[in-house]
Image (tube, rainbow over all chains, first blue to last red; front, side, top):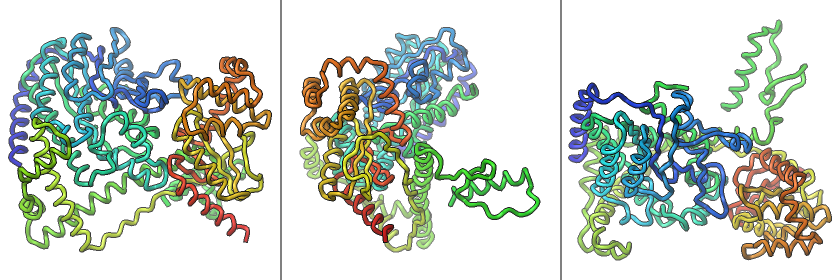
Length: 301
Length: 338
């Protein structure tokens, strides 16, 4: 409770001073140079196609951030996810466009700093960030970072952006998706007799990268809810830091949305290949809700 | 029920535009359109569309199920708080926060050993134990409230559609008159499809003469060997030898290689060179594309999937579940005969 009061206090003062600072910020740049920071969700793992030889199969065309729909996607009948990348071209034109994906499957908050350094190297004007799932999703509970560790990692990354992004660039941090809801969906698909998700988790996810803190069959309900509690705590940290940086950096814009956490994924929005990652339809919804609550929501093409 | 109401409204809207002179007979709720008076029924839509409709119904059911759980908890807490003359926050503080005992140093030590955690991870383990105890206490409290209250959830999960899966031209084994038809959508290289094929072989043995098994190949992007196997299977089928290929590749205990594929090709009198050339041959590629079209028509996106008399069965489930569905369908068929 005390922590919550302090955090609300910090956020309120940050937002107030941020509102004043917004008057003095550098003009916002167009988001033409996109550089996404994230993990397997940004890479759209197993969203629409599964590769036997690489079970962590990136489906970049279906990424909520960097997705595209060109000739091959049209020919093969892939889903058009209307990604941030596509929306930027539609709204701001194709001149001077760049579309970088710094996100890598398995990345966690410790990778924020190097990935954000890449965004700086690419002179990005728009950096959507969707990171932290692998902080929550670990082999064991003692592997989940503490609040202090997570906060330090996020600060290290944001400091790099503050120091290196072009003036007027926008950093858009999105809350960690509610992993518990994804677990519940898998559980429900099994109980309805449609897909045996625990078997798929055992055969795919658990052997390849860790999410034992949510998916392990030995977890109790209290264990899973503990993991969800960490998910929420990390989102609170992200929100507070975004407000703080936005208030104290006159050269860049920092925004946060919790729409990703609040979003209620449904069975058709979860990958049929691994019962866990968002499907192409789920990525399309991620793109929609994050764009509509994001810094460029008034651009509706 | 919602679906019926929707279609009824749709028809009523159509009626309102043309305003017939006399009240029409009540519309059959399965009719979704008519052409010169000839009805198009809801069940006439393509299998892929029916599957998509089912998925949407499932989405709605899932959303409502999650919401119901949250609302039931909310109401139970509000009622209990009112009964005790305090607010919900105070109730939870008294029943959860104040009743949780922090973990002892010995408990933390034991958990660290159990989790193999280094000393640096001690704060994480302490946090885990303390939080988990609080959450467990809350779960127990909620369970006690539920135990003392009559909670009745009336939501009913949608039934997967029973779909007419076209098996024209598909290789099959078992009598054509079998009361139960299984259509297996398998890819040739995944261990899960192989496991499913093994379960299917076992269930065929368990119900001799009563089942017919048909096969549809599913291809995956970049899987050249899987493409080769699918082509070889079709070549073999032309000679009546499909099941030789099927059993050699899907019922084997281990993964197979290009050399294994060539061995199987020789067994069914197909020259390996001809098979390799077919993978680049536009005629064969178009046949494969057509085969994938049939997979999409059946609404299959992630194999293995088995349709049992048109009922969807996730092929990742084990033998017992498969056998149960088969037995249900056999009983249903016997009931229909009486």
